[in-house]
Amino acid sequence: MNDAAVKRLDPAPDNTLAYLRMQLRRMMNESSDHLSTGACKDYSEYARCCGVVEGLALAERELLDLEERLERT
Image 1 (cartoon, rainbow, N blue to C red):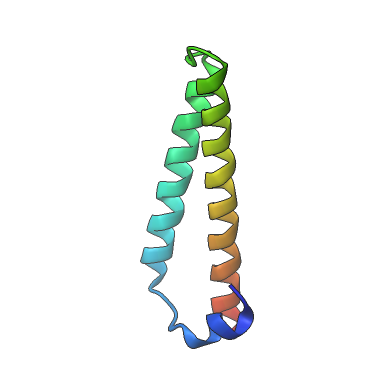
Image 2 (spheres, rainbow, N blue to C red):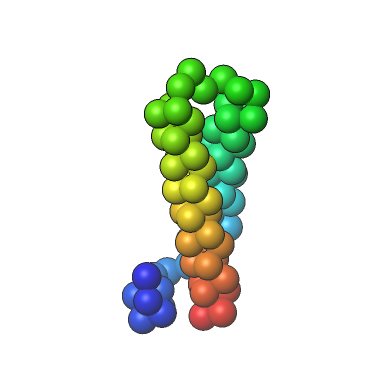
């Protein structure tokens, strides 16, 4: 999302962004725990879990960047 699009947004309540951040982190931790305990049955499940963790990490980073931009406006 570019800065112009962010400027059009009204700042979300802190608790909304915090809730989303907590949910992303919870899902990432669950998938990471699944990976680290060796619970994946095969390589395909392992690769899927790695993709989930990567996707959630990217989403979390975007959310953090959005929070920062909203704070600057």
